[in-house]
Image 1 (tube, protein in one colour):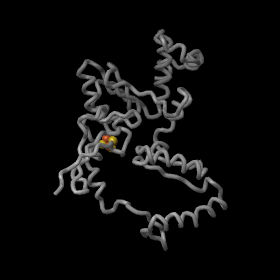
Image 2 (spheres, rainbow, N blue to C red):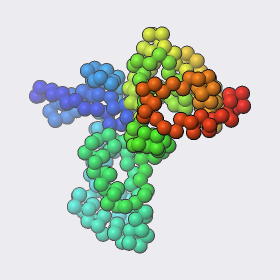
Image 3 (cartoon, rainbow, N blue to C red):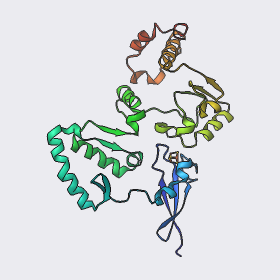
Image 4 (cartoon, rainbow, N blue to C red):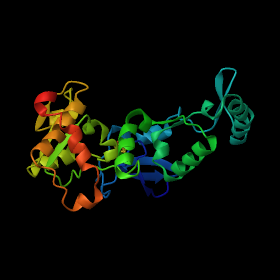
Length: 271
Ligand code: SF4
């Protein structure tokens, strides 16, 4: 038996990007552990990360191209798979247009730089508007609003959980999601550290979520009420003179338009 070697990777399953140490022995994965030296995750892994070795070795994992013949998938070589695509895809696009094709992109693809670069080229070459991913299921409104506000759909501001003293969580359950776009592996540990330094965690959610259970204060809200809560909150910031841009002033425009837009939404009215 050869000496084990260790490869350092990140878990590709979600945006938390937990650091991994992968122990390799005789060409096989002997163990997958959280990397204690990783600056984000500091050794944390959720149950999905712990199960990566089993996933890697799962006999049902797709390891080679599959082509559907007579109603069932059969294995094929890459040459056969590409020949099949060449035979069937162009006539479909010619007959029904570019949007007849759709791409479904999974998380492990978008968390690998090489595949991510390739997928955008593939989508462009296909010319379809139908591109689906985990993002299009649950976070595109965030990316659209970030693009409109900050100029790029990936310019997404995130709370600095390691330094802030007050954290308001609205419509999110980071104990379960590990922050998604926010990238907070071990949210539970980081929230407890915030509380230990005297900070407060407040959760606004209709449901008593795992994050709400951890909070200093949980405020229930009627489903669909978030927009009114936020309008009332912004109204109050202006009404009480709490909008102080400081050095940010030269980078911000449209503040007066926001002030006018929220005038009708006093908390007494929207509550
Ligand atoms: S939170 Fe879990 S799924 Fe997400 S990167 Fe970490 S180990 Fe992987």
